[in-house]
Amino acid sequence: MLRAAVVGCGRIGSRMAQDPLLAGDVFTHSEAYVRCDDTELVALCDTDPRRLREAGSRWAVNALFGDAGEMSRTVAPDIVSICTPTDTHASIVETLLESPQRPRVILCEKPLASSVEEGERVVGLAQAKGVVLATIFMRRYAGAKHSGWSRTTLWESLATIRLSIS
Image 1: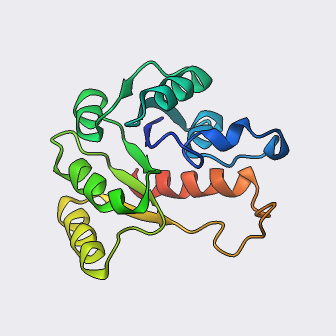
Image 2: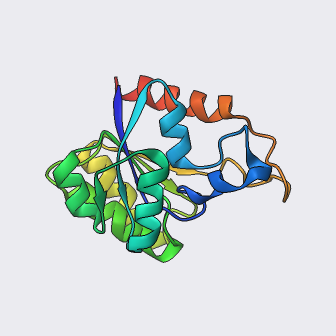
């Protein structure tokens, strides 16, 4: 079983799961980890304490952090999703990669970085550290109301990652 963590408890990290129009499918990283038999959601991280508490309550997670580095050092997740604003992606990836308890896989919402140079730097660092770094583009061409992607697609993605790190 992979120990998973989510950094950023906003819409794609957690809150879209509250939308009754989206019920029955998986639209958030937290829900994907909770519903996948091969993962356990062990930690959440957000700089907004209210959002963090709401997500912790929703997903029954007690390990709540305001800092990704502290989270990584404390709970040592195998896989971390980064679901924060774009301008924070690269720095959070770097923080996780420099942690003595770095994850084996980092899934980062699009875009990976704010510039090509920043992206190349974090990709190089991930390669040097032996960490799988992936960027999520699942709904890039989806319509406004529904992506057409099913929870099966999310679970297949997690299974593929699981196979690549086993």
